[in-house]
Length: 383
Ligand SMILES: *Cc1c(COP(=O)(O)O)cnc(C)c1O
Image (cartoon, rainbow, N blue to C red; front, side, top):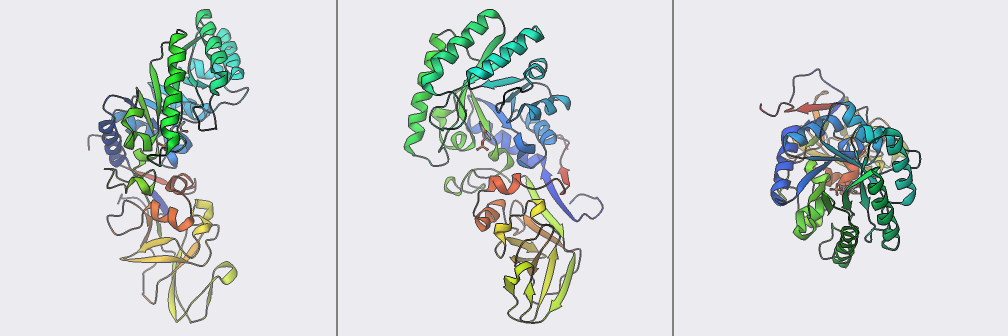
């Protein structure tokens, strides 16, 4: 625990664990470079400190969804390769060129906007062409690939772009053996071959997210894009626990018990009285709610370590607080309640909360709100 004033709640971010996860993933994909995906505030962990720690552990690339996130990394003084992939018309192409970002292009409108911005900037844009090999989300359809590649080659000849990468994204990499995986790999090899024959010389070809990095060496190509695994969370329970995958959870979410009180049997608890005490008991008030990202769907289910014992959310999660039934135990106000962490002290994990809320652990950590201070541990890599 760090020596700070007592806080209502905190999300401790163990940057040593993040570095160890990055190193473990690099060892799993020894022939590929590693991109640390730090979009969405590093899945809730804090973008800039996590980006720095990932770099220290050998992530030569950083990845974000939006250009604004990538530009914020540059504004924080972070050097090296940064790629962003979620563009909308009128986006900050010129700023991206001047910041030296690698910018994904999935469609002709984007290629037209980026080349216009490059002419104005007087220097070429680094772009990466994205193919939809079957995900059915972003990316250029194979039927439109020839047109996009042809136009990108023309722009290279004109000196407005350099195509630095060819890439795609999996639909079902978290379900090993799913037939779409091999089908997407086949399409990816075809679109890469087509672009290379057309004269494109990519620095990097890449497809693998965390689950593909962990389970599918043939998908590693030149670069793996790992998000959830660098935060120490298994991409899905079917792939194994974080321990089985050699990962360590980075975030520990805790709060200070705000109130403990005795109530009689038959007492309704929280909005709607969905929980009613079955006997005389003690209730503990936990000062975190759905505004902080605690899922309301975990009402009556979410697990919490209070003192030495596992408790459950009693009744509804409210905006700022929820209640646990302490079963008659006397717990001092100010006792630490741990919602999730690595699990070493018997606390639940983000995966336990995902199961309680009917969602995935990605959503649990990413939704932790801005009202919860992030407290960074091991910021100094040499300590
Ligand atoms: C978020 C994202 C990733 C990282 O996925 P994980 O499953 O968290 O590793 C990789 N590539 C793209 C395009 C993404 O949007």
